[in-house]
Amino acid sequence: MFEKVASRTAKTLYALAMGLGVIALAWLCLAKLPLVGAIFAFCVGLPLLALVAGPIAAVASGLAGVAVGLLATAGATARRARSGG
View 1 (cartoon, rainbow, N blue to C red):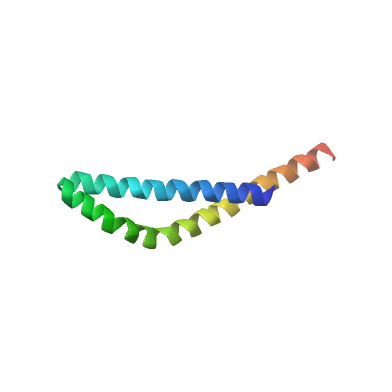
View 2 (tube, rainbow, N blue to C red):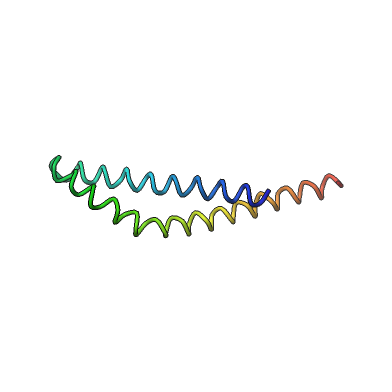
C-alpha cells in the first residue's frame, strides 16, 4: 500500500509542478514579449526550465509522496489495531 500511494502521489505532484511551470513560462513570454519574441523565448526557455526545475520538482514530489505514503500506512495500521484484527 505504501509504495502504491507514494508513487502515485509523487507522479501526480511532479506532473502538476512541471505543468504549472510550463504554463507560467508561456504566460510570462506571451504577456511580456511580442509574438515572435515569445515563441523564441519559449523555445529557448523551456529546455532550461526542464533542466533546472525538473530535478528540484522530482525531489520535492518524491519526498511528499513518501510522507503521504507513510501517513496512509500509519492510518491503515491504526484502523486495523482499533478494530482488533
